[in-house]
Image (cartoon, rainbow, N blue to C red; front, side, top):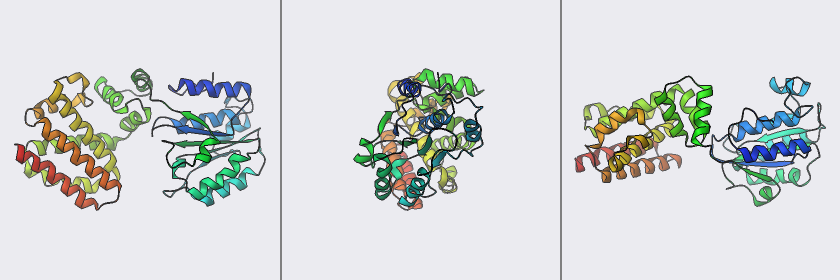
Length: 329
């Protein structure tokens, strides 16, 4: 069985394995699923197998060896340095497609985040989708079908990626990371069935530092320790590149406060390793206040994502979080 290193997605793997066994490889494959769910990882593994001389990812043939050194001329991982994938990129690929495979029977092209492809680029890609050479395999990935032309969708075989089970994620972490039980539990919970999220938490030291700093300034705000809150904006400003992580941590921590306010159940906290802080906080706030705070946080995140002035958005959010404490204190 192929795909030994892939966790979950059994239905997709069964379909792809059947295609490999029957040597009936789809010309256009559309991998759909949330960010971090493993679309790119599986696309690359599938490309290795397709290009392998005996379609097993043997690691010994010239195709496998050159794939490993990133010099295989029959493989292209297509990405853009810009926020969109333009028509010029697609046309360059089409020029390459016209050249027969060098080492095997196929040429594989992976396009990640195809939803970022301009309409002109998608229309250009249609020419290949409508009349693909026998040796061409396209693997297209996207978090959803939004912004993808119906004509592109209709000419592709769609593979919908599902979230992994809690057990799958926990097993993956146990096999790949040497960490304590509490850290593992946090990674499993924050992953929410998406292994990529767990990997981000466990492999990004900045995330763990950001998490600790964010939780600390939330404590300052809720405890009305205003002498320590004056530097919070500077923390946001110096971590603009990590703003999504900051908002994620804020949402999860405020969510836990609200959950504990309503249930008093420690076992369902995502930040279970911070339960002492949560228990200390919950007696100082109301569920009404926390629900409002979550709205303020989500409103700020939405405005940042739509390019509203960063400083203004963050300062207003922080003022609202503190003002609510004063009004309801």
